[in-house]
Length: 172
Image 1 (cartoon, one colour):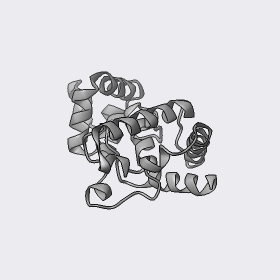
Image 2 (cartoon, helix red, strand yellow; image 1 turned 90 degrees about the vertical axis):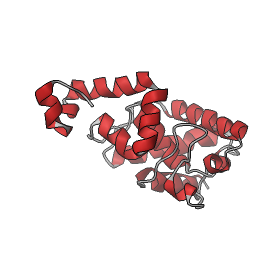
Image 3 (cartoon, helix red, strand yellow; image 1 turned 135 degrees about the vertical axis):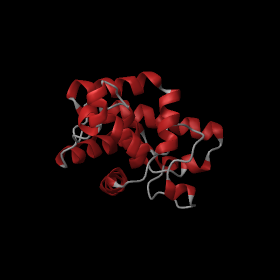
Image 4 (spheres, helix red, strand yellow; image 1 turned 90 degrees about the horizontal axis):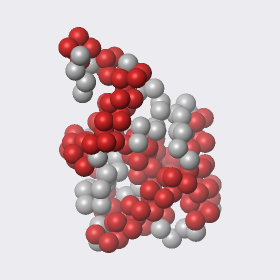
């Protein structure tokens, strides 16, 4: 069963769908359209802690094999997904509970600047979250957004992504 769960998480991590950064916004285009993830946050909440840790550890290892570096420990992602699951339950968010664990994992990693596949952190967050949720992210988590900007500045990613910013000294 663990292999099947891991496969579902990995498929969701690779998908272009996005999870919500809060308990009140729609987690993905598929969920908003009435579709349900094959491994949802609702199902995640029923797993024992050791199974959750194994699923995320496996997802991190598979991401690494695909060239994506994830530095935060699996336990961090388990705690974040658990907290989001509880928030969805408290808010009565059926869409949140039906959202993909894989997309949620990837979204958390992107918001933390921890989904390192070589893409600039700000542009990656903008692409994964979508325009509306990206603006929500910037407003709700200004410290996290600022950290993404700083990570891009440290690697030169902001200037590579936006040559006009390099010339004017502005960042996204």
